[in-house]
Structure formats: structure tokens, C-alpha cells
Length: 622
Image: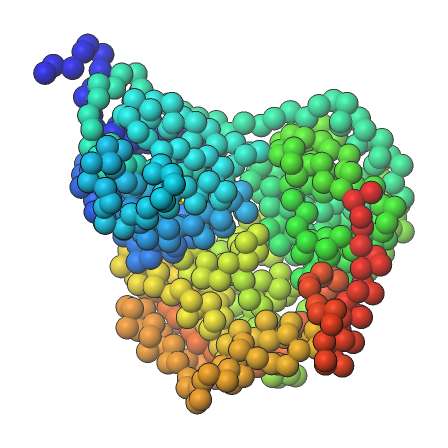
């Protein structure tokens, strides 16, 4: 049968792939596909139809073979973050457990506002073969399946039950992925029969299109209110979040701060908005912050929060600020801009800073700015001593200091979960703008290596000569390490530092700090482990194709890092660190955690009382 004029007869899967391949974005004067390709593990739910379509586009939409679907999602998140949300990757998984393995990765992308397209196998629309392999039957609702579990953790969800639906669904999904306010993962369920069904699609659907990421201009009235608040400030401060980088507004942030002499502090996601030696960079704020940033935060009377969702680690569970401090926000997302009775400026960070600065005749008092800078100098002295080898047991901080001293300013640093986000945030001195990826929006163990693999794919497209460096603890390594194999297979070099402290040491620290006994965190404190033994991380990494070596101390680490930097293969360096000593002890803000109100332990009772005392400073949203 001849297709009607102006149409192409394609399967649903073929139409999806062809459409994706024709969506473009102009980035730094260079036109590129918005979708950089994908990560895939095939099964019966996606190999026969979507796999056939992807094979035909293998040169335009490269498909990276994953080892674990969750790791694929982490890699897609790392890729999107490295591209500042201007590009994304898709993930495809089979029906059933393959798709369900992507749930955690979808949660990570949702929490971090990162674009990721999930193209996942589903059941059969006809239901003729039901129940099928890996189908979970809901007795009271036959339309409900495991893919419905994604609804709370994605920004867009659809199930294609007829080929024509993709005409509407694909643009809607892409609009979500590229929207600064609603950015997050998009899920499209692809029933196995519908994937292969054919339809006469209009040719116009597949015409090349160049997209732009929207820059929403702020409301003039909101800008005027924010400007008035700043004009009355005696002790102003800027909190710079990850949204500053996504808006590509780091230069505007620097210029605004310099024009008005306002101290700047950074969130975890906002690390690397300013260089470490910028005179107005007062350090990281919050629970994993610095004494310098937290001191001025407690005294500031007007706080301008740009591109941050004000997570509890930023706000010290809302104890970091003075009770009467005025909060002003610039954020593309209305949801984030209006938190805690802030004066919201809803709009793009770059346009918001430009509008706020236009005609703003204001400079922060010299004494305030000098005080902040003096505090930062004190903090720098503490960090310099903290990362110095030899004056305490081998630690995360010392390993961070070694890499900081020997890496290139444009190398990318990746860390997540456990104790390393705090140690990297506190001790890393930013050498290059936008070079730090500490995943703490979801604090997801296992992101480190997989996310770095995705970031390295992005770096290969932008700065191929630069390194991607991973800080990971032994606990996270054991949770997910198979993308070491992916990196080796795809020739995407990583430098991975496995810092072995014998278990989940940072949670052991939290356990002890709340009066509890060490239990089930360090291997040595697990009653169900009769005799812990040491994992040979070096041998394990070698078995996956990496170069690997074990070092005894920070001095040997420096030498090993030089070898890894000069090599052309993924390189793993293993070093033991002390699980109890060597933690960064300064810079912390109060953090709310649940503690037992009733206990037989005097230590737990005392810790509970101390925890509750900290609540007196907690901002109540008024």
C-alpha cells in the first residue's frame, strides 16, 4: 500500500528515533543534536522494535551499552549536568525489572532538575497474550503496571497506545526536558505491540528543528520589590546555586557581586560558580559548608538566593539565617522562588541579575565586605592545614588536597553521597568555573562512577583533553561499580580514587554523634559478619579492564595521580583512610535529624536534648 502523499509509513519506534535525530540546539555557535544519543540494555520489551529502529540510527544517535539500568540513568544525569542541561541522553530498558531499575535514577534526575528521556518497554495494549513475561498483574485495575511507578519521579509521563500519539507526546516531552522551570526526566512507556505498529506519519514531523532554551524575563514589579530590599540592606549576601550555571550566568553573578560589593556563598550544586581566589567568594554554605559562609549567613539582613531550591543542607534545616533576615530569590521555577515568604523574582537567573542590577545604585558597606573576606582568609588557612598530609591520619581531605594540587584547572570532579560530598565541598578549591559535580540533591550512592562516565562522554564532545576525576568511598564503590567496565569498553577514560574507610563511615559518624553505638555501618561493627576481610579493589578494577594501583599514603597518591593523568586508560587508585579521625571538623551548620525521645541510653538522651536545643534557631517560614 502506497502511503498518502506527504507522509512516511514508519513504526512507532522508527518515528520516535527519526524525530529525535532531527531535534537540534545551537550551543556556543555550534549546532548540535539536542539528544546526544542514549544508554541501553535490550530485552524482549525493547530489542525487536526499538532496537531495530536504533540500529538504523546508530551513527547519528550513538547507543552506549549499559551494565545496569540504574547506572545508565546516572550516566544520563552526569551527561546532562556536564552540558548544563542544554543536551540530554535517552535511556531504554526492557519491560519489567529492567525498567524498574531506572526508578532511582529518575528520582535523582527529578531532585536535581536534570533532563533525561526514558523510553521503556511496556505490556501489550491488546492484552491478548496476558499475562506475559515479567508482567505484574493488578487484580483490580488491568491498566496499572510497573511503569506507573514512575509517575511521582518524572516531570512528564505518557504511555503510547497508538502510533499517532507520538506526534503530541514527543514535543511535550522535549518541552519538559528543555524548560528551565519544569526541567526533569520524561517517561514514555512503549507497549511491545505498539512499538512495531506502523502508521502514515506526516513528513513535516521529521523536518529539522533548532530549539532554544527559554529565558523568562522577570516581572518588573517583582524586580522593584527585590531592588528596594537590597537598597535597605546593611549586611547583604548572595547564595549562588546550581541554577546560576544552568542559566550560563556565572559571569553575570560575578559582575553583579563586584558592582555592588556583595559577598557570595555557594551551595553544593553551586560549587564552581566563582573561582576559589575571587575576593567575594566567601565559601560554601550550610551543613557541609565553611565557617566563613555560615558566619555571615547568620548575620546577613538581606539574602539574595539565585538559582537554588534552598535544600536543608544549604539552610542548616533553616537555622543558618537570622530570624529577621529578608529573603529575596531569583529562580526560573515559581515553586522554588516562593519558599519561606521570600520576595520572589520568577525568571531566568541571567536576566534576573541583569534586571536587578539595572539602575541599582548600591554598594554593600565596606566593613561588612571586609569582615566576610577576613573570615574567608581564616577558612582558607584552616583548609590548607586540613588537607596537609602528616599532621593527622590519612583522610578524605588529604586525598582531595593532593588531586587539587596536581589536576588541570578544567578537569571535572565528580562525587556523591557518603562523606565525600561534605569533604569535597569544604576542602576543594575551585580552579575552573563549572568543574565540580557533587550530586547531593538526591545524595545517591552509586552515582559517582556512572555519572562520571556520562560526564566523560560529554567532555569528549567539548573538552576531550581534560580529565574526569571521581572521588568515591568503598561503600559506594561496592554498591555500583560496573560502569568502570563501561568506561573501559567505550574508551572514555576516568581517574577513579577509591578511598577505603572500611564501610559506611560517615553514617557511623552520624550514629556516634547522636549517642548511638556503632552498629552495622563499619564492617568491623556488623554482628552478622564473623570476620571481615579486605576487598582487593585494585584487582577488581583490573578485572574490569582498568589500570589500577594501591597507594599507602598521600605522597604515593600524588605520584600515582601523575601516572593516571599521563595515561590514556581508565585508572583506579586505591588508598585507605581513617574511618574515625581526619574528618573536617569546622564549618558545619545544624542539621535536623530524628532522634529518640525515649531511650535507655544516657548518651542518646543527651544527644536528643542537644539536638532539640538547636531547633530554637529554626526559621518557621515566617
